[in-house]
Length: 168
Image (cartoon, rainbow, N blue to C red; front, top):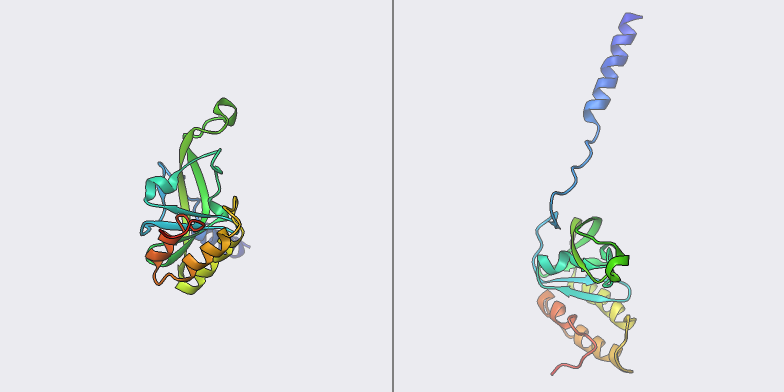
């Protein structure tokens, strides 16, 4: 009996020492992995370009608040990321200012790996075809021509800054 108790204690100690420790909450706004800026955020219906970490992690309730999980994130080197968790810092009550105050977030991101330029263009084209505020009757055609002609991730990100406006 004593031997079985000792064996059970040993097994329990093995299980508890190997258990995953809970992650510490972030201490300040930022991103969990380094990204190459600018980055493209593409959802089913929207495209956003963020030039640097500060613009990426700064948001407000009026601009969509915690919208990050709805987007695929592609950096300028062609790496794709998804946001696993968002932690807000300095968020104020929506009732105070109708959600217009900006605040920052910590983005816990996961690297999905390198995405092909063709797949990234397809994601951008899908979002441009169903924009959240389509501009003009031929905005989707303009976006299709701009995005379809790019030859690099840098060009893709630039084309997605304002895809519905003709190139000047």
